[in-house]
Length: 146
Image (cartoon, rainbow, N blue to C red):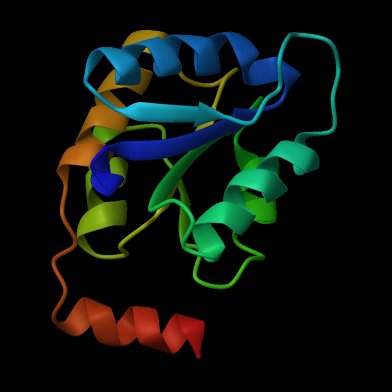
């Protein structure tokens, strides 16, 4: 399968249902989705799943990931602790596009208790469809990584 069509996804219990819907959406669009958990709505520690996805993106095992928790805040904090990870918490299409266009985000973070599934699908699609613009933005990314 094309590496660019591979996505790792993880969530906590609060965003489990939205994660499942996004997995179905992505599979229907031809993406290979690797789900690292959670496996249900029983309470779990979100950091476990955030670390799995972030570590894989950080080490180049997968090109992109999607993380979900109740608000998206906790997963964002976990993900951005990893080198080479640029996680973006997005609740709207414009932010999703700009996170890719100017920041080359490689993990999309969503709040399962914040965003509805229809808007989440549109945010995911905008994030996937937008390419990094490069240019002056690449210098900024290099500065972040330094």
